[in-house]
Image 1 (tube, one colour):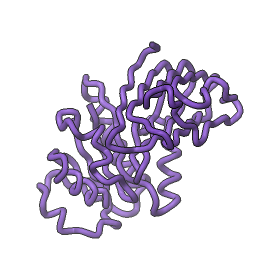
Image 2 (cartoon, one colour):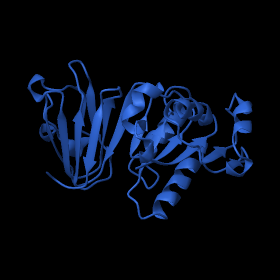
Image 3 (tube, rainbow, N blue to C red):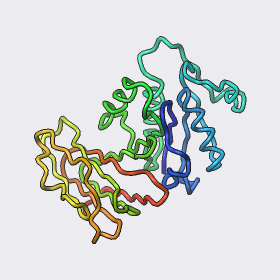
Image 4 (cartoon, rainbow, N blue to C red):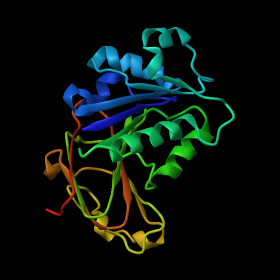
Length: 237
């Protein structure tokens, strides 16, 4: 199940994110941060979920009429002079909700692409921290966080799809294996800022790829599209 945060900046067309929203029962909580409310409203019409919290200083919200569509008690308007960005504030709320439940919940961040470079870099710096989203959806791509001892199976890949993998700094050791990619990830020197950029699926893999981590933190950038299938488990196959 997912805690979904909509934030400002570029976001995918709702139809491209169906892997996360097709089953509305998988959406546990929805948070809109500032102008992310505009994306949330668009997605809400497509997938029929409920927005549970609207938070931020509303300095980038252009459609203030949207606030009138929601109960006042779910709107937490903040002062512009604050220690955290609206996205960070929403992530703090999401982590609090996850910690208070006994249900395994992934945090999905929608938006934050394009626009202000400092905001984009701010989100990138959160990856792998206590406030990290598990999935980050931008205009045509999804960033997937892989922790230690994790398997992620990806389906729906096609010729021409580009797949990039990055190690997050600060880990003592990095071990990741892949199947179904043109260039296997176990051949990369991850200890020295290694990365795999613009890899692609092997023709013989039938549109599938598998990523298995043993040590370290990684994030994988995949094309976001209707055909995409994701299955992540916390064990080694």
